[in-house]
Length: 95
Image (cartoon, helix red, strand yellow):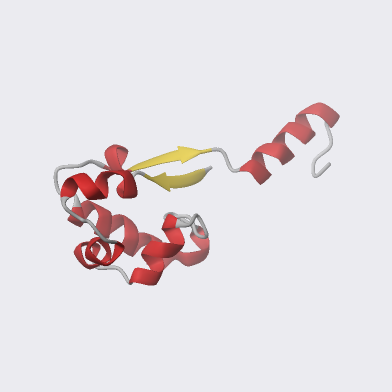
């Protein structure tokens, strides 16, 4: 599963008209915000624990009336999903 965010869809309505203003309100570096926005990193990626924790907490800070479910959702990881489907079809792990 991959963690995805609705932060960017909600930003304009919350008064964050630029990525810079959103990053400032979240307390994250603009680079972190842009990487998540371009889907180059997952906001909950275990490979980057500190930025993900900072991003999630920052989103909650920047959108105080919103819940985790309002700001984030999950979707299947295409690679993991494909490997699971192949194992189900072949009955062989790692096939």
